[in-house]
Length: 291
Ligand code: CP
Image 1: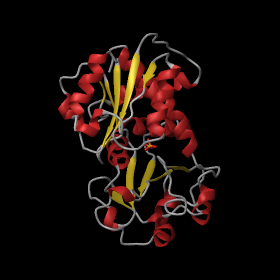
Image 2: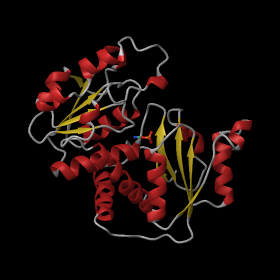
Image 3: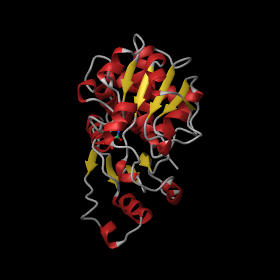
Image 4: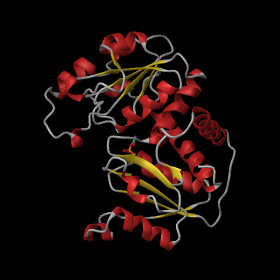
């Protein structure tokens, strides 16, 4: 299969090549793909991923084809495979997909146009990982030796699972923190929230994914904020030059205090900006036959 489905199958130099191309785009380099068309197939809600892919397409001279899930034949029971195969027949040159099923792309092995994974279940979100890496690289100029704490709803987070795998490979020390109810034992070493705040270079907050919870969260939002939220008081105790990241959307007053979201050490909006450039990079490499 072509495109970008997961970073797990890419080597560290291949991941760096994407980040370096994204940085070139950010500095003003351009590529144009006149006549190309792509479609976003989002089976789950999205603002950043869906529209930054669309911005990336526009910046590259690619025409985005609109897709309305509710008004499509998905509502009549058409499968993901048949939907993608249809757009391939209609002549699109690439497809971006977000779907609630882990590794949904296993069903799409015979599709020939590049597929870009905009998030699969709680497994992976490769372009989010890339934009997170780009943001870290711009900040620190390296990955080796950096300490990152992933804080929050680890169990339901494709960002936590995808980021942890690649970050460890790039030489970062990955810690996790948050309520036991949301923890898993494979993503990283557990660290107390206050120790993470004082010792880590990157505090990577995660959204509490209320919509994925089968059981009710067993602590209140107020208690979550007090125990694991990034408050003004915790920001004051952060290591010098440490940064706060969050894939967003943010739950203000739950995992982050509203005023912290845009404080000097927050890189949340820079992450969103970098999302356009990494998506330009992966589309470019795929349309050039390199992904
Ligand atoms: N970070 C992220 O994936 O945001 P969206 O769900 O809005 O795309």
